[in-house]
Length: 173
Ligand code: S3P
Image (cartoon, rainbow, N blue to C red; front, side):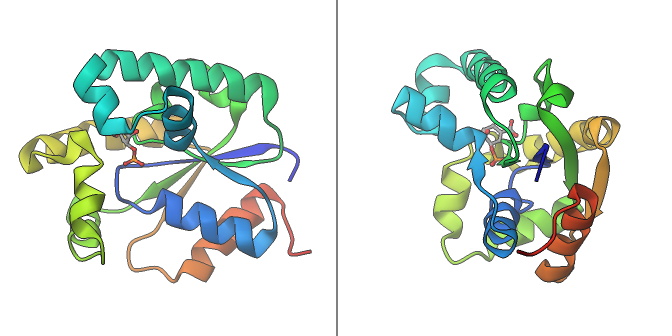
């Protein structure tokens, strides 16, 4: 894979799951912006929000974006739900938006094996009404920055991977 591929989309849509499956299937490396931030700060995301606030976290996302642009090539990058706002998003790589309705996403989180942990690690998913409003606002913006939109609702994982691979021009080795 020559260029980076960024997976964007709302919290809980399955960016991490798809990224890990893609990496395994197509033998590429995958990194996650939240993981990069957590390891750099040596703190979990909820702690960062709690101690320093959202604005501080957004600055960390921008720093991460700057590093990615400069230092990372040919990698699949799964992005936190708000990462699409960084100034240099399109300079990092091609942007793939994973799209699904809010209720499907919420149900996916709620029925996951470790549902409690999945919700707890997302400070902006604590209040359902607020999360839904954020989804509504974000959806248009995700679509605007996307180079490819993949509808993931009830879609077979292999099919999702194939759509991304075709777009990225990668073949199984
Ligand atoms: C956020 C999404 C989270 C994480 C942070 C903020 C957002 O990532 O970056 O809690 O603004 O949507 P996930 O999309 O992986 O949950």
